[in-house]
Image (cartoon, rainbow, N blue to C red; front, top):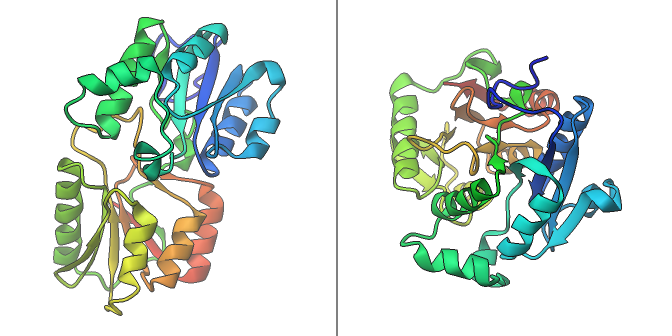
Length: 280
């Protein structure tokens, strides 16, 4: 049985998978997918981040809650879980990197070695520490094959966006991603209205509500040489609400690389809001 095309070739279905759960519905959906496949799943939750209902849905022996920064405790928990695999799902509040972060000695030692402190460098270092205890940090798209964006119109049948506008939006989004600024932008007829930064997609979309521009296009892409174990772009029902409030009705995403949480519901809602979603 093929559980997901993103699993390593030597995947051992008898070993536990530990979800490292951040905010939102993403880790909840992932948990449901893994359970439906009959695989062993455990949870590491984070204080003030993970959905309490998700935490309560696990047996006491299969769940642990930690503070952000307790890397030593996280590694110890993975070993105690007999987990050969871990998967990151859901975001952590960006401000936690500046306030509320309580790094233990293990985390502090790693942070001191990093010249750049971004998602790729921090989580890459954590993944390296996991590998030392034989834990494989999986591609964050794993088990969510059916939730991924696809090529062409996923909602709507055509739009008024010109090819040169789409190409311009892709160029800006990809360059921002390359520079590690963010993975999204909003443009209108050759003008860059807003780009995603450290404060995230929601704040970017909120900024656009003030411009009252016509034919705005929201573009979401991935980094060159994206490490899909973390920081994979996601669109959910909440994103649609933000788009609608900002009067952005055109969306372009990288096909196969953007997770569309609760995809069936998302497509139904986008159609009802007349938001056109196109996979590039």
